[in-house]
Image (tube, rainbow, N blue to C red):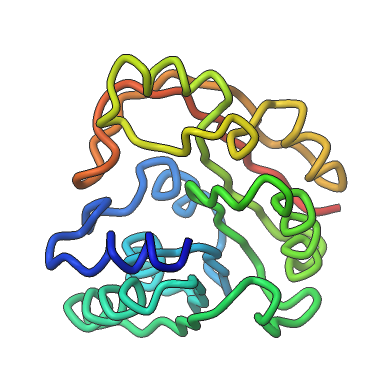
Length: 203
């Protein structure tokens, strides 16, 4: 997987654009600024946006090329982010370290995604906010009609409402729904898709 993402991010063009995800932007503007973690952050568009709002931003990804792009974008926007490169298991964040965590199209391997979500939850303080947008299992129908909309092609890497509820059961659900949306994010997210959006407050 690392090689795939390094190859995708090696181009001078941003794979998913420089603009932050729309849902993330909406949600960040609703909550107090603090510290935030962006797992699987890729080229940094979302992390850099949060930093422009005054957030203390932490991010990680397995792609060296993604970090290079993120660092350049942060410099372009005159902000600072702390971005680590490495496997999920090697990140050494602390329990209750963050005020918010943003999982934006963070499609982890099927065998590990629930375990990763549980670990991430330990990093979020009680009362902290989790913001989540990812492709739903129904999204495969959209990919078959239009491959340019992007997203994993393995159904087990996609999400159902039930899976999100299960993985984040220790949260007050502020919003949880499946939506059909029009994506226009760089090269690889274009067209109609099916996503799950979730905002939860850790109990």
